[in-house]
Length: 240
Image 1 (cartoon, rainbow, N blue to C red):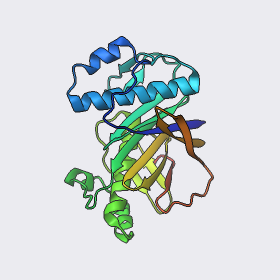
Image 2: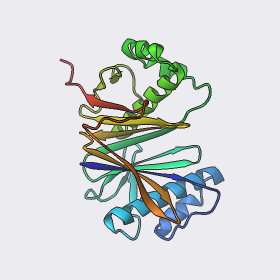
Image 3: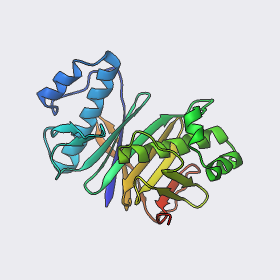
Image 4: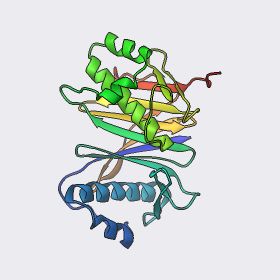
């Protein structure tokens, strides 16, 4: 099954909202200027991707699940995940299974918070310490963890609910027993795409209103990737 990961580096220009329903525009008016900007650009990117892939001329109704996770109201529509980092808006979408997307900006001195550090297993800490840039590696692992969190709709992930084994490219999650994650660093952006149960193909798109969607690259489950920062994780069997 294919996942579609679209990115849009936005400007201060007001987005074209002609594919957004009136209720979405009304909701945006109650937000702060920064929140409104992100909200509208995210909904526009999602709407344009739904039009590009499925020919839907208007963004379908979106509801909040009990976990707070946004979802299309109709169960027959794709699952999606939105993410924001700096001026980059991202959407991950799949017609099968569940998805989770996280974006992070890599700072010169990226340091994990104390709760984030506490969630790291001994295996993860050892792997991070062995890398040429431990702070960068720790930030990528945190981005991967957040993508699984967003897929599951959980409010928190601890070492007991998700453990990563970077050296072998495996993970074990009690909140998403079958999940695969692909991640890369395209400085200064870190991205992580999670899908349950597996990602057969990850198709990456860049969006510009003047050009539409331009395919950037495609990753397959068995593909060897040249990027030094590309990581792929697949699920280990549940612990007994």
